[in-house]
Length: 97
Image: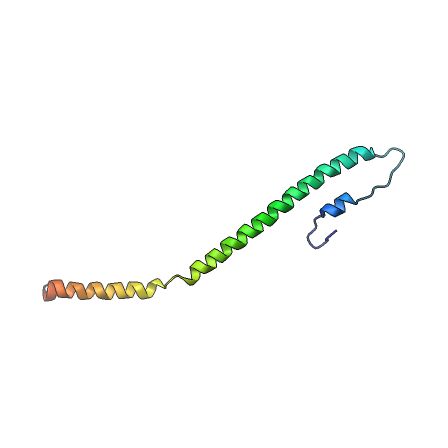
């Protein structure tokens, strides 16, 4: 068992041995129940792997998009300067009278 994650692996469940006692549980029932648990673990593990791959894909996509973004401050300043020059050209000194 991996104690760092605190989770059982499928092999841990599959190979777990229990001591038998006079008034113990039915070994057949325990085995059937453990089989159900193993199937759940497999399904969860598959889903985790799928979601990790999807997450990595979106992180890469986000990083790619971040690298293609131009800063807005330069663009906004440039647009304001051009607009100001256009106003001066169109309206001339009448705008500031």
